[in-house]
Length: 184
Length: 234
Image (tube, rainbow over all chains, first blue to last red; front, side, top):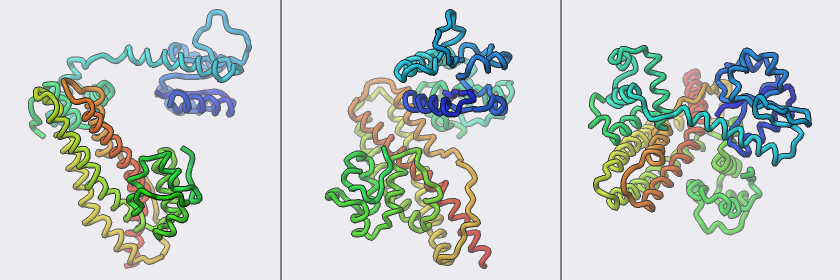
């Protein structure tokens, strides 16, 4: 999971990084300057931690990503109807960890909802990959663009946890998608 | 785990991190290490204690990789070490996985052909690893030794360049094989033997990752620089 922490406070950023690494095995990217963040493919992240003023200043980017934001707050009052999960930075360590824990859980749940079994198209691509066809040949056979083939392959890898062509071939044989490694 | 240094007792280090046992074996140290410090053990075995400590540290801490220090060791020392790790894969780890795999297949439901296919995938991986080892032994390592002989203490540091890590197909295949076991295993099988295969795969993978880091990020740039320096000399 890729997380971006965007605040001007170096020590705060480092503290959050420490908590994420220590308890969640996640290494967030830290940005002291919002400009650096936007120069660095901001879409690549699965979640964002920042203060409300940054969010408001760049609402075009952040509002559509509302479900993946955690708001840092410096005030001692809890907002009545929170816009997103909050992280009051003055709280003690245990409370902070608990909040981060439920945020990470929320993100995992969202990711879980996205993945299903292989789609029919993905299965077709899997069969052809397993038979040893190149991306270009697969695109021609299925009448789709090479980028679409690449995106199916990316989904196959993330759904099955298998990256190499021979790994995919053996998976396909194990599940009866192909009977033998032909055309290899 | 914290970094170790030459004054640490070797026995404490190993008690904390038993996965180092095969690593110390490669340096000719076997169990029954007594309670001597690493420095004393190295003196007795005529080993470079700095090199020894650095290798142990990179092995225990995946994030620790002191490139500059590793590059300061002589290439033949690194070649010797990697030769030993290759021998370990060939003589112990691969046969160990095969032994467990064969018993797993024999003891499992014969309708379960998934295991047979996974074994075939492992055979493919094994073939790739063995052919890399063969190439190291007959071609790459001898060429590095010859270049070291030719340069004898001459400086070639200005040629050392490190580009980037290529994805390694052995590491990726090991990863895939683990996924086939962990995510996709079906049917009836002997649980204990299955654990045996999986743990053996994990330990091979850990070792190969360390080997590859040293190989690709240290030895390859040094070797390329040496060969270039030799070439310029001629």
